[in-house]
Amino acid sequence: MPKSNDRRQAGASPTRSSPRTITADSIPPEMLDPDALRVIARLEREGHQAYLVGGCVRDLLIGRTPKDFDVASDAHPRQIKRLFRNGRIIGRRFKLVHIQYGDHIIETATFRRDPEPRESENDTGDAVEDAKRDLDDLLITEDNVFGNAEEDARRRDFTVNALFLDPTKRTVIDYVGGLEDLEHGVLRTIGDPHTRLAEDPVRILRAVKFATRLGFRIDDDTWNAMIAIAPRLSRSAPPRVLEEILRLMRSGTALGAFRMLRACGALAVILPAIDRYLGAKDDSQAQTRAGSFWRLLEALDSDVHQGYLPSTSVCIALLYLRIIEREADPATREMKGKAPDLVTVTAEVLVPVGLATRLPRRETMRARKIILLQRRFVQTSTKRFRPLAFLRSEDFPDSLALFRLRMAARGQGWDIYEGWKERHRLALSAPKSELEAEGSGKRRRRRRKPRTGGDASAGGKPAPTAG
Image (tube, rainbow, N blue to C red; front, side, top):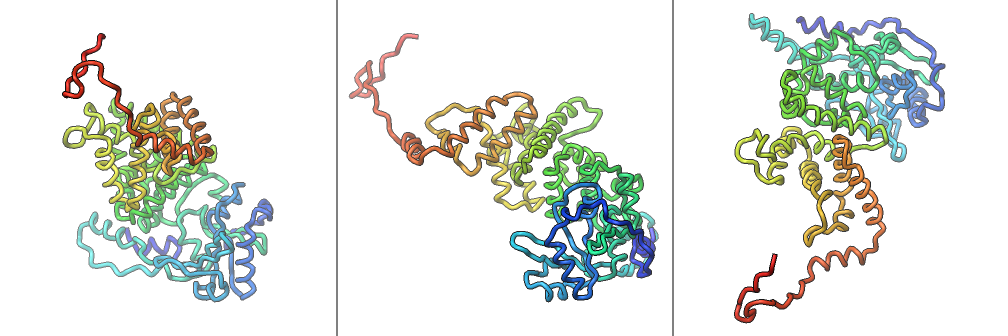
């Protein structure tokens, strides 16, 4: 696969072509972010081009309310910074400017173009090895080569994400066929899909996210490239991969997304333990096991649709809950040694996950804790279990959320969840004296009852009772 040609096909040519332009009459002006419009107006007054770009344009055209409004301009980062005292330059691999209005940030980037292809070493003579080396060379490690609007559009990932909106002229500008793909509900890479995905394999996860959230069909060539490039996800930065996984978990389409990740081979690379747990399609035992995992994701999607936003610890706990249950059961354990206590099992499973994904240690510990606290929901009060302290602990909301998802996946135990939900409401308004009384009650020593049998003073044992 000739790398240099692929790069040029992907849009690195400086030659301008006529874009397709349509009016933006279908987009109500009130849907546009006023802070983003302020940024664009200021840049234009200073003689720069500036547009809304990417996902916000796509969402506006299909009637969705964008979460963020990003701006792209021909102004360089330092030029933008000089114009906005409330701006700061961030990033190394990809420098841009965050312009802050109160708690609101407008991300403002400079038009980019693809960097010049690096010189390849002499061919080895092995076609397979040469192809692998070419794909390795495509991986983007720095993305600060500035260009014009067309070059910027052509270096983006998918056609539907490369549209510009000029709010001043009220037009949408399309250099890559994104409008047509948007009309037909198709997700397609810009240029050669193998090249685009090899440049950044995390785009595979983004493709899954857009396809499942927007209900788009992935173009056949793009899908085949996703399957071919999926093994190269192992070379991507673990924090970026984890960030995309968490976005999928919070998308409301986690079930469909994880099924798609498994189908293209990406799940085996980014979450190998879960892929192994799901097993082979022709293994009936594995499919029964997999069904319980899919039901958890289905329950999560249902909650997200109701407005629930799962924390990172809940996402991690939910992903690995079934594996932990398997390893804690002597009858199903697959790890070495006898099944230890649950505290040890959660460490066996989650600590390696935290290290591999570079998950902050506090999140790993919190995920372990909310799994361990699940037994509290079916435990009666004892000397060592203080319900009020449990209800008012910082871990209770996430623990209850996981319990709710477990009950929903099982299709039973909902009354228990509702009971704890009500107890939590009451506990939050309980006076401090009640919490202190529960604590002191734990420490109070009970008076011994006089022994009825034997000589207590001589250390005799009480007489046995009937029955």
